Image (cartoon, rainbow, N blue to C red):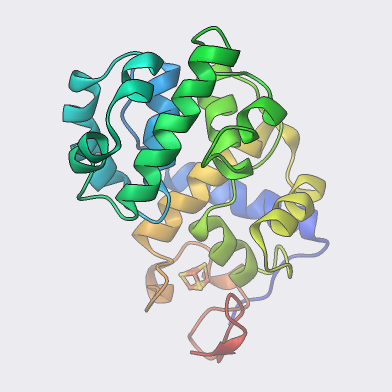
Length: 227
Ligand code: SF4
């Protein structure tokens, strides 16, 4: 069990320093070549691996290009094209509806504000933040996915539980310049070392400042339960 630095701002700074060193090329792992492809890839990535999404999108982006093409695609046809993705039926509906709105209300362009994006079907704050950051270079929040949620709790950076509350809490303690990279670093560390089940604490660069470290600690602060 490591000892987190206090106050939380110092813990965040130390975590960031070490993870920047560990993952110097950390960035989004979805493949896309324009804002519409980014939006669609992010909608598809909910509860699904980026690897699977990239495989499906390689063909999908060849078949459909414009918002109108997605909006006018029959539901069964689009669902079939993405049927190896979790919740593919719902996601096909979201994509068709979002693309209809983009074509009709936004002149065919993916919107560049949080409120317009979150008005689109299937687009929550997390998806909107990714699209704003990587599609429009607008950073106005921190993307909180399952890795960010788990690691920030394990590392005693937050005690909040829901992604929305965690994001609000993080905005107070993570330097604004790091809002975008914070997510990517957490995701990289969550995939490589601090996995949901059986994290590799023995090989973790954060072990001495992590109160969930398994050595002689017995609680996973992400769940609040014993390891
Ligand atoms: S791998 Fe272990 S020590 Fe490292 S951040 Fe995760 S719980 Fe803490």
